Structures are given as C-alpha cells and as structure tokens.
Image (cartoon, rainbow, N blue to C red; front, side, top):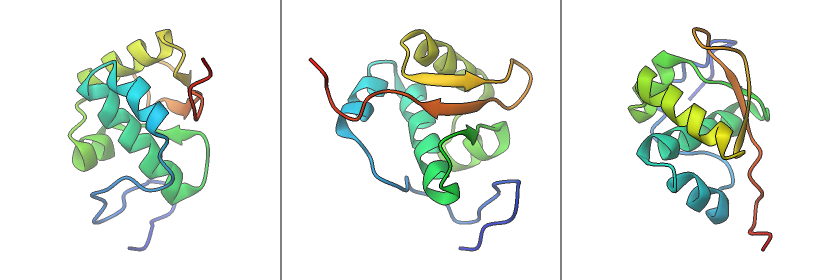
Length: 107
C-alpha cells in the first residue's frame, strides 16, 4: 500500500490503523453508527498520515467506511456538541477534525 501525496486516496484501506482507546470508542458509540464510522475514518487517517488533524472528505469517507455526506455532518454536529472532536472548516468544505476525547475515563 503506497500512499499518494495530498489526496488521501489510498487503495485497499479496509481497516482502522493506529492505537485505539476503548474509552474513546465507547464515547463515540453513544452517538450512533455514523459517529463510529467517523471515528474509524479519523483514526485510519491519523495512522496513515501521522497527523493529529485530518481532512474528512466525502469520497474517501464513503468509499472506506460507508459514511455518506449527510451522516458525516450529523455525526460531526453531535460529536462537536459533546466535545469529543474539534473542527476547523465550515459546511460545504471538507473539514479538518481532531479527536479531543480523553484516552481514559477521568471519573
């Protein structure tokens, strides 16, 4: 698997890369299947690019994890309100997202 520069169109990506926190996964799962798919997409891109902020585009998020555009934006809105993610960018553009949920439960 060789990455192409700048467009994140990786062939054969069918899994989540990088370390996964069970606590983070549990917090995202409280917000539905769309949130879990968004979590998987973000963690996969973080594993591939080694960057905290990832660009969530429509093409690859649907191709890799079945995350449609409308589901993506609903999940982003819910997760942003729950303070699990931080978002840069606006509607109509591919936002840059970073997970800010803690790695473990803090009581």
